[in-house]
Image 1 (cartoon, rainbow, N blue to C red):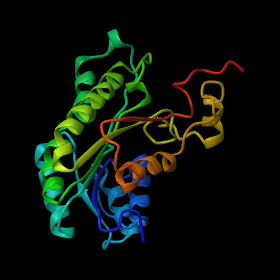
Image 2: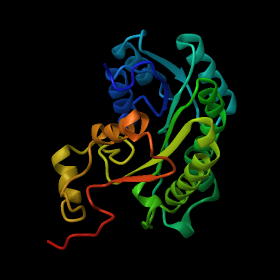
Image 3: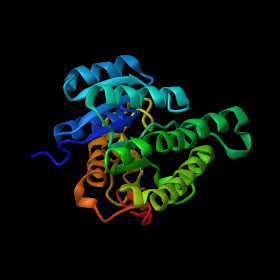
Image 4: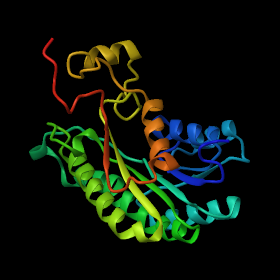
Length: 253
């Protein structure tokens, strides 16, 4: 028996990185997964890899209400219901705060914050109708602290934690648990756009992170699985930091 047998989960930003690993792991644990992304080629290829009996790809720009409505419709047409959501889609821009153009700041807010809000607002009623389920929002290590040159990103991830807590309180009576994962440095195309190899990336974080390396997408996926499954049945409204100890403190040697 898989840990998610009978579950139907929408995963956003599922074409690559953390989202792709979450989709693979969820499918391996018995879920049927709706893969949402704007990277149609990669998303479609992943759906083919997993098999159409357990995975469907839908074009989903998380900033667009109509795309969310279409994604839910596609999920129900394919699998009958929706009882899980992983709000994973996000973007990262590096810039000094006072030099950040308004357009850039608003773009990050639209994807990371508004996208999360639209996902909760659109999918929560479907989860309630299915008898309850889970929502996992991807926040960040920077939601728990500050970091230079990622002001827009950090602001949106703080907001995601606020949305998570409010949603958890409001949706608990509807049988919906809502939690957030807060990754630190993880080897994904977003945080590693130049495609540095694992050894080079680990070296970058060796003296910053107590565990001495960057995280792997499959490690984040395992946390998302825990928060989506029954093992976390008495947990809601909480941030879960997965950062190799970075937030705990920086080692000197």
